[in-house]
Amino acid sequence: MKQKKILFVYGVYSIHAEKRIKIFLEDDRFDVSVISRHDYNIQGINCFKLIDYRDNVNFDNKPKWVRAFIYLKQLMYHLIFIKNVINTFKPNTIFLQTLLYPAFFLFFLKKKTPLVITFWNGDVTWWAKWDFLEKFFKYQIVKKGISVADYITVNSNLAKECCKKYYKNQDKIIVLPYPGVDRNIFQPSSNKNKLKIKLGIVSDYVFFCPRGLAIYLNNEQILKAFSSLKDHIQFTSIFIIGNSTPSEIHNFNFLIDKYKLKDYVKLIKHQNAHQMSELYSIADLTISISSNDSQPNSMLESMSCGTVVLMGDIPQIREWILDNDTGLLCEIGN
Image 1: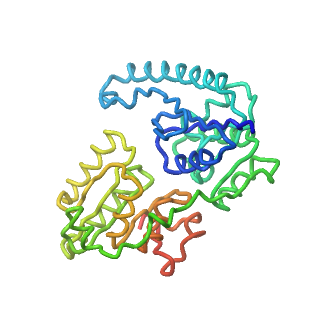
Image 2: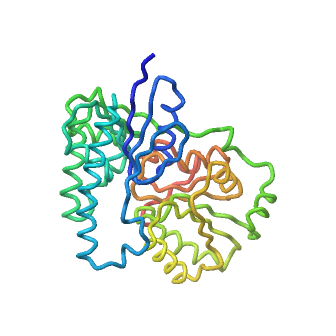
Image 3: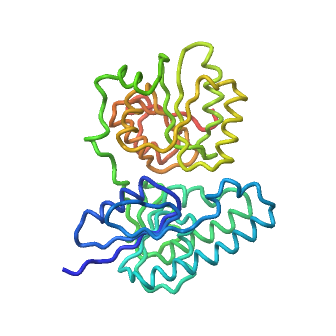
């Protein structure tokens, strides 16, 4: 049986991307490769890693004109790199996980291969709605992506309705939830105290914020709330910093000092599935009050571990969470 060649194009690390790669990788009918700025070190695939100058911790300290020159040079290099990979690998299908950089480069290449785009909800519901200049360019990227795709998958009905504005063949817009949760890994722990000791946590309460430090996650709001809580209860708040840049981490540490939470906040890097399960299990509350979201894997993982979730009250999340029933919803900005 001749294998179908599948090429994924992603930006930085994504747990959703990794899960989708593995779905095809575990099927003998497919030969899988990926282009990404992240090194997807998964056995059985070819990972064509894009060298990214932003991985250099000193990049932000360079003069603006130097950064601009580096960016332009990198754009050309990445475009040629992606074109060469496609010509060499000759995929039968190309999957784009969102249209974040570098996925939209595919629009500048002659379309020879069926293109499937998996939109995050934010791509079509808010990504193109920041300042005027960004809105113009991102709107054009989203509009172009929707028009050239052979199939589009989204993970909420709201995102599907947004896509319908640009896509004539609506039968090709498919609501497809992310691959979900491995219930053999994410399950309630029978010994929370033992896990707390293992992780060096001695406080009465644990709050887990697993999403990273992006602006749309409203982390300053969370810290401000914690600052008014610290005089009343003993707690530890754990934040996953994920793919945060050095400047994002620096700014977050500034906020920790601003709200006098140094003894209450614990920052940790990316964890594997078993470590994440332990963190969910010891938490009294998993918090993600995102202003703009899709179907957070962390929400499903937390619920699978029996931990209450506190989520931002937005339409996509209301497709999953009923307030005070299957979780808690928080008005954005409150």
